[in-house]
Length: 298
Image (cartoon, rainbow, N blue to C red; front, side):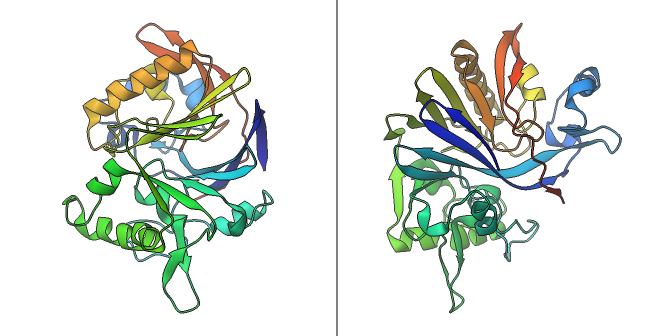
């Protein structure tokens, strides 16, 4: 496992797998194809399979240890699922065991948003075939805005798949009483703060780390590929409100650049995390963090 220390907080990357789901044009509608080619020297192969013409993304979780608690950011895709059109995930308990953590040892699960690839490991099947929380001693942080938006009675986009995700990954947590629902912001401890960063989903959240002189921001799906640093107005095809996502992305990246904060997205491959600097109307990589372990490709 690859771990770095940021002030009093340790940050461990928990890899699941890589995927190459879409071409740049499909992933980022309206994007400039020349932007990829102009930056081929560092985008390929970690973030772009130039020969296949596919964007390369990682599925991973982040494990934080702060103020005596073990905190998991996102749980990836479900290892066993009936969700149509969604690939099966990696066994999360095995990945956590490599970091020396058991499911019972997780104190808090932060769901940056409620898409299938961020909540799939929230639950598992018990001996009777019922889905129950995978982390029996943890509180699960859900934003109110995403809970409302993704409720099966509200969301009409891909209703079958969304309903399955809600039934398998959200409802068991609500039934167990382990959900902690927050509104605009939530303080985890003196080092960690959650805040709404809407656009990708209405309740999408970023988690800011500030400890000692170190700063980092876990940006979830505000970024899927580093070309969005160069062109911050470029939103992915998975954003529910692309224009709002672009405004939020620019705001968060401006803060990160001004505070020399490490930007840690959910889906970057390669070194996984990056310090950025302002560069014209966009941003440019200044220093990569170096979480370089490569999970399997699917």
